Image (tube, rainbow, N blue to C red):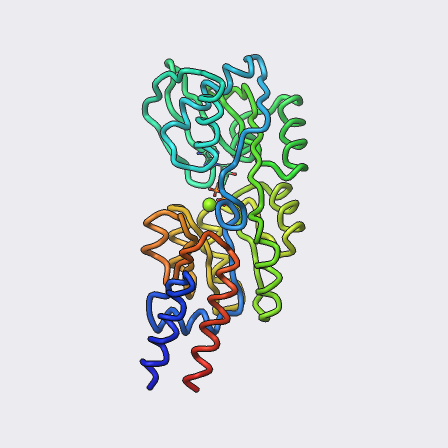
Length: 287
Ligand code: ADP
Ligand code: MG
């Protein structure tokens, strides 16, 4: 019967670390035309590391100390990397108060009586005139596939931090496998266009960059459907819910896991192609 075939497809998935939450999710995955991937933590390892710090009127260490104080109130992967770097350089962090997160843009807080903001170059450029030395550093990091964040003291740019997040080892073959299945893979990211393009070119997929959370939702509605969305973070939950089916990465946040129709229990993005094959085979058995 139909339910029996679905049930056996779902258990076959579970044995291979592919958690499918029910018949509706399985059907949606079997019929999917476009798969949208979050970049950070999904196509990349999701553990960015600080590779450079440059100050403007402040020392490198002072920039890192202030940035880390602000980021200690954020769970963003970039925040964790900055706090970790400050720790490894032996800096002790001042307290941060009134922390304010701006999803897809950055975070600000009061540190030692000043409003310190750590944010994307785009956000910074909208609120301040960038000195040439910082603008050049941003361009250099981004061209190398890195992410740059700017540090503002009130409205004054005082430094830049560059971070690198490596693509997952199996991301390239995972994208190629989806193409062979006739599925169109797309990367959606809030990161800057230069860094995102460098990574997308390496992995071989189309990219939409510099997206705000609302832009991601709109795009998911506009891509040729049915659309699956693959993500791992709290900030991916709305996109996972908006897609015809959401797929949560292993090690992702509980919110992502709850919102998604399927989840990968092994830490491999290649599980997405396995999910499509398995779901198609299961549906084929029914018809
Ligand atoms: P992604 O789509 O790659 O997961 P996000 O939408 O989470 O990226 O963030 C987009 C951009 O916003 C980041 O590349 C960064 O420039 C900025 N940003 C977001 N959160 C933070 C933060 N806590 N600290 C610094 N920058 C941040
Ligand atoms: Mg993310």
